[in-house]
Image 1 (cartoon, rainbow, N blue to C red):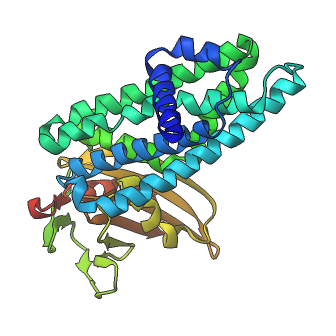
Image 2: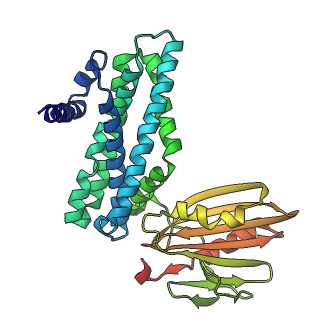
Image 3: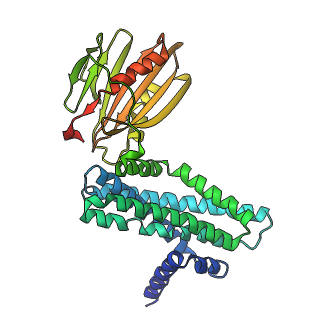
Length: 356
C-alpha cells in the first residue's frame, strides 16, 4: 500500500506540474521531492528521444516498432544524459545563488525546479501513437513534440521565478538552455531533419545550373560529369564509386545500416579522413534540396603537407543508407570556379526511387 501511495503521489505531482504549473512552482519552497526529480528527468529524456527517433524513422517510411531495441537503447542513454545535465546545471544554479547571497535556495529545490520543468516532455510520444496508426499524421506528431518542448521551457521559467528574483533566475535559465544544446547536439540535429522531412519547404532548392556531359549510373544513383572526367572506381569498401579528372577527383562514399542517422551526422563521419591534418582551413555548411532530396552542402579547405586542398561535399541519407559526393581539388587555380563545378555536377545527382 505504501508503494502504491508513493506511485499515486508521484503521478499526481507530474500531472500537477503539467496542468497547474504555477501551483506546482509555489510548492517548490515547502515540499521535498528527492528521488522523484531524478525519475522525472530520466523519463522525460526517454520520452523525448523515443518521439524524435520515431519521427525520423517514420519520415523514412519505417515503423519505429521495427527498430524498437535501438530506439529504446538511444532513449535510455538520453534519459541518463538529461538527468546528469539537470544535476550539473542545478548545482551551478545553487552555487550562483549562494554567491548572490540567496541562501534560501537549496540544492534539492534547484534540482526539482529543473527536473519537473521537463515533465511536459512525457507527452511528446503521444503524437507517435497516432503516427503508428496513420503514418500521414507525422506533421501532427511533430507539432505535439514541439509544443511539449516549448511547454518545458516555459515551465522552467515559472519554476525558477517562484524560487528566485527575475534577475537571478535568468542566469540558471540561460545556463540550462545553453548546456542542453551542448550535450544534446545529436537530438537537436534529429529534430531539425525530422522537421525538414515533415515540411521540406523549409529547405530551399539547390540553385546551381546542372552540368551537361556523360551520364554515369550506379546501383542507387546517377550523375552527370563533364568532358575530361572518367570512372576510376576501385571497389574500395565504403566507396560506391570514384571519378577523376586532370585536376580533381570525386569519391562517392556509401554507408549502410544508418536508419537513425541524419544527413549532417553522416556528413561529419564521411569527411573525417579528408579533414584530418588540415591546417589554417575553413568550413561552411548549408542544407539544400537536390532533386527533391534533403542534402547537406559542405565546403572546407586547408593546407596539407604544404599544399592547398579544397573540398566540396554533398551528403544525403535516404532511408537506411548514407551517400556522400566528396569533391577533392589540390591547389586549384580558381577556388570559386572549382566549387561551382562541383555544384553543377551535384545538381545532376539523382537518387533512385528504390533507395528513397
